[in-house]
Length: 394
Image (tube, rainbow, N blue to C red; front, side):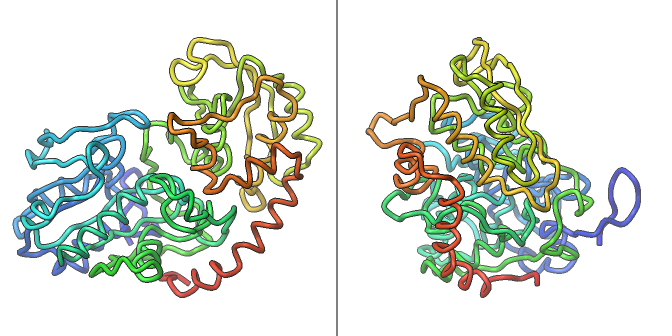
């Protein structure tokens, strides 16, 4: 166990990036090390793993690799990031969210082991997962060991929710047929992807100490560091698996406000009517409040948007994926100007997030969301059996 920085009291969870130095230093001692990380790659005292590696006398940190949003988290959603020199460590930094998504064979030839330390949010369409899996693929091809420094799933490790991705809809927001919420730590997921989908990397996971599957983030004693610019609080992460689907529509998902993903709306939405309809659905653990907001950027920037804020009253029974689709279906039904957003290649952005076009078509056809939820449960049964094989924490 480690000591919580603000109180001096023991906290229940020790991170993989802490156990690396405390218990598994041989993984990196005397070796040339590369690290995929960003600003969320910190220990319980908020010290960056990159800085800890760089300052250690028995470790040679030779290169950093950054995901979407960059090494220090200063780039917005979808913005390509260039290569640079890290200002703090003066170590060269390669962007894995620019012209390419994988380390090159030449870069991997400079190192003896590649580490991964980024906080995820437990959701299929979070791009850090695929920065990790593509890094594993590159390491498998180059014969370089890949090490994941494990971190808690902020949504807990019990609940699995949503549909399986159809491989025909694979993209950088979903490369594998896994559910929206997979209920695994990033280390457990790495192991599943590596073995189940044939990546074949020489993978090692530095596991957590003290983490239990029933833990929510607030149970870990760890500070929350926003892993991306629009994931400012743990409350945001709690609703993101469902409300993120508004990204695939012309309705604002709250980007450009102080409550991204917790509120949604548009100039053409009647928030009071949507709120009443959602309350009538009696979605477990959720309350809905009509709101008005004006995004500073992103969709409807500078315009007055009317919509709803989602308040989670009971995390134990709340199902964010169901709640998000209930909200989306009602906005779709009550808003004449609602539209699905299509990319320049004609593929619906929503379908990439959903990993299928069937859900969009079902919502257009007025299929009840509860029926979709039941279908997803049936669809997930084979994954549930596979998932059990890869649990480190039982």
